[in-house]
Length: 452
Image 1 (cartoon, rainbow, N blue to C red):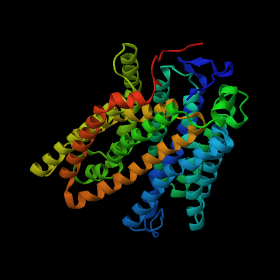
Image 2: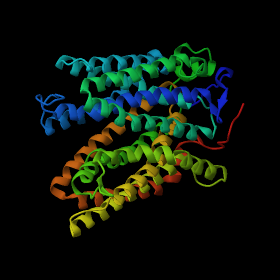
Image 3: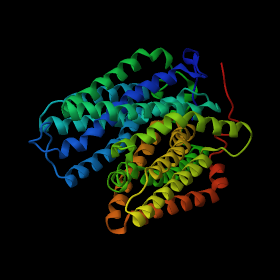
């Protein structure tokens, strides 16, 4: 996607545009609010109405059903959010609208009424749909065409997402469980307000990024908006859609973390450590922890490989990421084998699995975000990003179905099957790598560090 880089946002910090850090903190607070609310949502639903901290008293099945649809709709809403940005508002204004909707949604959830509960969820779905695809597209807009820093920039942005996710489950979760569910919901809203304020204050570093093309004074932007897609653009869209298949497979496996792997940690893992039992929920923080620790190293590895002239295309990174993540499930196979032979499995199997999953995620997820901004036609930039997030939502749904199958197939079969399928699917895509790269028409050729 062609992007015009203007003088106003060429000031850099740690080798990247300052605007990246404005988007970093906006997304960090958005993810803090979202994951914080998500951490207590199901607990609130299943807690008895007569409890000291009363919930809604739903059954586990009812709570998980609503949770599944909710998490799916949050990401599917990225499609209309992208369309609205492309055709009406532009990405920058769409992010502001999304942030406002999220503040309203979380604030309404703080009201202890059923109408407020459903209304609040509706606002959050709409808010995430407006903000998520468009802020990600803006990250790509910070870098000129051919800038090798783009993938690194998305990894830095991705670290921000996970700092928010890591802190929110601890802070919002604690407030919600100890002081009251609705205080937790309200705290999430306050944090989103902080994100909105700093995004507005940082506009001087985002001049020319995320504006509505329909009002662009740039002749090239106007031409891209009015003319039909070229053969090259159509080919690139085809490659993007095919890459989304890897995204669905990846997240269908990866999202076992919140379901089947979470239950396994609780019920079948020996969590005793020097006489103290590690809470099962703490294993959920391993992914975010490893991303924060390993994110820069993985990004630097791929950038160094690229500069040395070795294979480091986005498609190749995604293939490798899928295979590494799938390999991580072999540790869960070993864990289940140990459980079946001794009645318990060690914690280190989960730690190793999450570490491999994280390295795989760092090679695929931020890279695929960057890939969308490189290949998507300018006038469909946010729509294509919306489709990307919708595929992650579909992956979440697939993950739930796979997790449910363990009730009759058993964990050993499910974990092993996921590992084998992911590895073989990655290798299969690898067979067509050269042909798929040809369809990108050199979108990633001659990438280099561009400074001003």
